[in-house]
Length: 228
Image: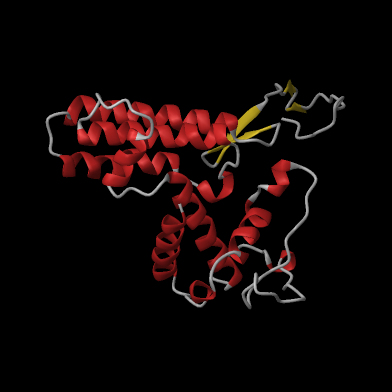
């Protein structure tokens, strides 16, 4: 697989033990599908299809169960499939974001056994009634948690050389703000470090002071949920 933005990339042929390697446009790596276009379209399509199959399995086998059981099954068997390594691939396009949210909306209809309501926003309200955070909020909170642990040295993630403190503080910055990273390509602009620095700088100071992973995750998720 060749990763490039060149309009006319050079083509090379590679061999291994005398066998010519085939050319692919995307390939899985540690459970995440990497695309030669450096976007997450293929990965999101794959995980949504997998999650919908799991949801179908739950529907067939738990249709007569109560709401609590259905909700637990969704949280345990379906949602983890659309959140695995999400701090790496958290999408920025509306198409991909909506595609992921539809998985949770389908689950909400099943949990509440309500397939009749068709008014705009009704599925979104069902998700709120079940006290399920939007998947986009959960992904953002997860990225911030990983970022917090990395900057504190609790993760083996070498981001120190990319974090430059803001030189001139303003009312828009908290004491632990970092300079944003400029980028010409969306694939880098919306990758983990540049994207999360922007989100980190927008957090209120009282969240920054929380250094324990679980309390930080709880507080950040609650804060982000209130912003939606």
